Length: 112
Image (cartoon, rainbow, N blue to C red; front, side):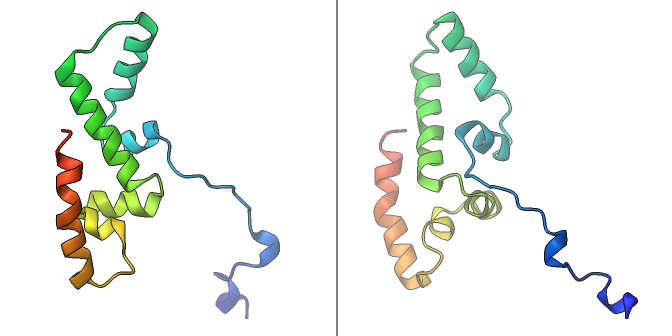
């Protein structure tokens, strides 16, 4: 009996953990970027401008965060596929997802 019930989790053994979506800093870490947040923090503390090119890149990255969201499963799917339609509406069939992704892509790219 002990051998077969060894891997069974008994409710009294559970640990409740409150989970929240990733914030922007955690999102950047998940994307493999460890430089952006310290750069932003330093620029903010020293009240220095980062220039237009850096600002555009940072805003593009922030829009990506806003589109994907901070839910770990969505972020992991985007990292795995690099495909917004795989993240956006997983419950829709591909015949609907692809045309929608193609229509939304110019909205995302126009401000890069």
